[in-house]
Image (tube, helix red, strand yellow):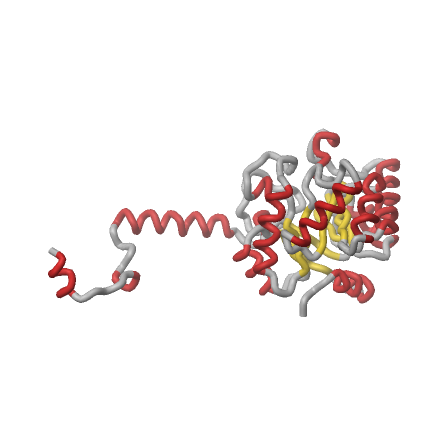
Length: 275
């Protein structure tokens, strides 16, 4: 059965953990979906792991629409959530609603995700009132990397922790159906999770969030530019891929691939007539 925002609500009520992974293309989304994941996030992390940018700031609406639609075609059961890229919602409420609508209409998203707390509550409220589910994102928000001065754990001081808790309550009040907590102390994430009626999805926020999300290239060992502390590599697919690529190169150079079983036949009589 197709999973929706109600799946998130019911999981919180029942105490069942939610699972989420990123995907950016049809074939990967299909594999993740068939594994039984609750939700697939088309993250603006595609800027890093797909497009090779140093950050997520250069990702465009067209990028998100293109990759979102591809993922949606592969995900038959999972809820597909698409990130709103940098400056697609910050400038005005109008921009936020229009761009969120594009992600649903053109990107085939089931929900959108945007970064920020109290400052984006007007956008969250307007988008949800337009009938578009919104996931909020607090803590280490990559689109604010320049303001943070780098990828740093957030919410460690009393004032910062209080602000994060207040922001979580505000985005819930504004209508968010869930909130991602990234790069914050585990005990703070536990407190926020206990205070909220909506589910929290953690990434670098400890095990007591209502669910977890990881970038699939990170958890499969496919992205080696940097590995965050919170990542567990569940398989070294990157090494397997490199071994397969090397084997292919060797067999092509040796003339052993393609073998007879990989080729098509034609009658010798026909070939002889062509000489």
